[in-house]
Image (tube, rainbow, N blue to C red; front, top):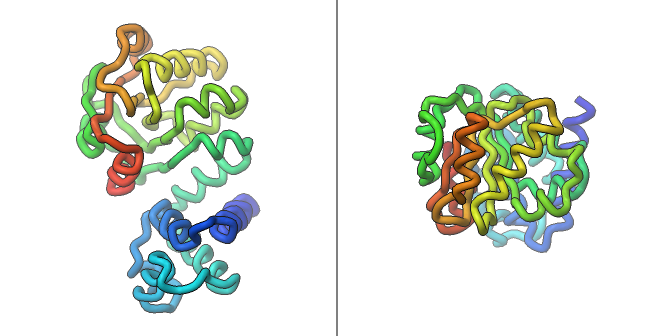
Length: 237
């Protein structure tokens, strides 16, 4: 429970320090996969109040509202199994650089086949059968991960399970994610993601395909134009 309090404190801090508190409120609500109506009911307010804060029609929320906001998100997530809280609590005990590199992280209540996962985010499966079970995902800024994040923090990318998709954004050449995954395996006792997705390139480099085939790691390339579209598609899963 202490870890969850840390998550709550960081969420409140992120909203308070944000130049756009309304957007931050919406970001965290969507991170927990809660609708405005669900959140409003849990908080005991009308859905229009949530909408007004998120759109900026109301002034920045006060401390009392923020505490109720976060407490409601936590309670709703706990009722659903606490998947978002577990992923966030694991991530937040890592370095600041790791938190900056991770754009989104989630665990599923039920497994999704890699083929279905790829269809939802407009990705083409290049290596793999499409039947591999995916139990969650982590989206990272590939440049920040490789350049700034300490290797010791890499294990936190797997969350509570290794059967997750590792989604790399900002890929330019089409090989660095697979090289990074291979390096992670060497340092983490053979841990590997259930699926690697590259975003930012039209096709993977030949070396990436060779590594994926030899290591038995499914590989896909996302066709969506922007990172925002990718994150929105993932949150609809």
